[in-house]
Image (cartoon, rainbow, N blue to C red; front, side, top):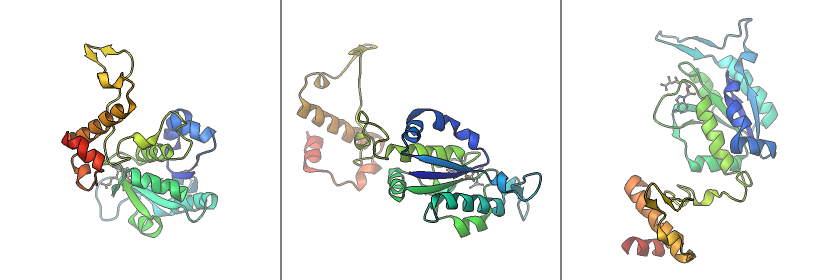
Length: 239
Ligand code: SAM
C-alpha cells in the first residue's frame, strides 16, 4: 500500500511512524508513506505557500502552484492512478467502506490543508474526492490524514497479525461490537458474565450476537435501519 501525504508539517506524523500498528506495517513493507512539503516547491526565497484571500476576510489560504508541484512530485513516485483526496470538513464522511476502497486502490495521496484551506481551483483541477473525519473543524488536515492512514492500515491483510481480526469489530457486520472482559474475574464488585466462563462456544456466540444487536439498537439505532438481519439474529432478538 503506497500512501503519499502533502503537508507543511510532516513531523506531526512521527507518532504513527514510530509506534503501533502503522509503524509495524511500515517495517514489514506492507505500507510505504512518502511526504511532500509544498514549502519545498515555493516560488520565493521566503518559501511562501499561503496568501491573503481575494475578496477580503480573515485568515490565509494555501496557494495552488506549490500544491500542484507537490502533487506532481508524489504522482511521479506513486503513479498517476493514485486516488487524490483532500481532507476537509466539507467532504464525504470517512468510514470503513472508504477505508477498504483505499486498500483496493493500493495508492492514495492525502492533501492536508491549513489556515482557511486551499485555493478552490486546485481542488477543482486535481482532487478526486474530499473526505471529512467528522462535523468539527480542525486547525489542519494532518490529524485527519493520520486517522485515515490508521484506519486503512487495519484493513491491509497481515497488518494486524493473527491475534486481532477486523472482522468482529464494530461496523464490520453492520453492528457494534459486543462487550469484552478479561482478568480479574471480579472487578469493582462486578463479575464477568457466567456465560463467558462455561466453555459452551455456541452459547457464547449467541450471547455475543445478542449483545451486539442490543448495543446497536440502544446506541446507534440508525445502523439497523438498512440491515437485513439473519434468521438467527431475528430469533435472538425475539428471545
Ligand atoms: N475554512 C474551512 C471550512 O470551514 O471548511 C476550514 C479550514 S480548517 C481550519 C484547515 C484544514 O484542516 C482544512 O483545509 C482541512 O484540510 C483540515 N480539516 C479541518 N477539519 C477537518 C475535518 N473535519 N476533516 C478533515 N479535515 C479537516
